[in-house]
Image 1 (tube, helix red, strand yellow):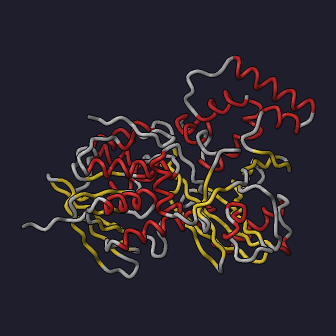
Image 2 (image 1 turned 90 degrees about the vertical axis):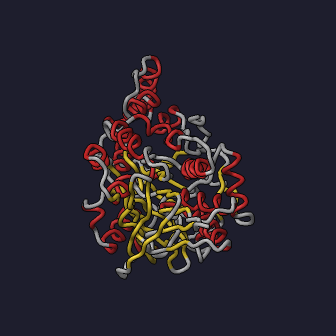
Length: 452
């Protein structure tokens, strides 16, 4: 009898690990390759430093999908906890609750400026821009042109690295489905990485391997589909793995430029035009039991480079090792090769300390330590004509019978964890004989219709 080849999963982030656990529960053999030498979880990993745990972004566990919620509860039955702290917005030295009402912000600005913001909002509601083609138009329609200029423009341009009028309006689907205010959210007791460490352990318990420090270098294919992958670790050792099916949560450019033979020129050109933002998180340990009550503050201040400040202790008390301290995650969005990305860890720590002091969240003498973590290509950018480039890639990759991109990086989707997980579940169902389009999962992780 011929040997049944395993299903190969490239990447051990939320999508890759969700697919792996779903497959082993169905009795299939899997092999997972992860390039990171230390962590599973991808962008949702939790970094540990001297007893402190911190994320690369605060990952709220919130979904409309009962299936995803059940997956989370089963994967982490004892440490999946409600998080009651609210998010907030920092603007002109004030903290405002999210989601906010236009009148609340207007009242905080004084009579004249507040009145102008209200009038601008009413004009936008009475005569909205149609069609909404970019993020600037979406925000103006929602809040008015004046508040857009004052409050949102600089913030979103920090995150996406380009003018809001050059960011496709589709990104708003994710921005405005994010859990805010009184929405019921959950959080693993020791951070999102605990969830994915638990999922990885459940795969390993079934004797299915997850290899860290294995970077995919080449994806080999012929007329039958993908045949095998080859790669290396940081020591330069060479590895090869055959498979029956291949699931990829590599970024689309990584996947396409790894293919041997290479893709057609128009497909490669489309991949080169896809853009990403990277993130550097500086975790500051502050000798203060409480800094602010919110779990997250968006920093709507154009004089500071920091985009968000996570208060990990307010996500879960177990994120800090000493209750007399607070750990703040200063998040900096950047592009590989720019000045922020190329800055040393020391320089990033100094920048974070300066801005925490400048914004009034600490005095320098209170900051006792700083830890730096980086994540390349964390945020897919919806730039001009990105949908055309994506469609070119999608049509060609769809010709492979045994290769499916999954997850946020694999599908170039600006989406939360539950969305990435649903794409993985659909890919598994396709292996089992289904006919789902993983690219069409709704922003809130509800199921698309089957293609068949």
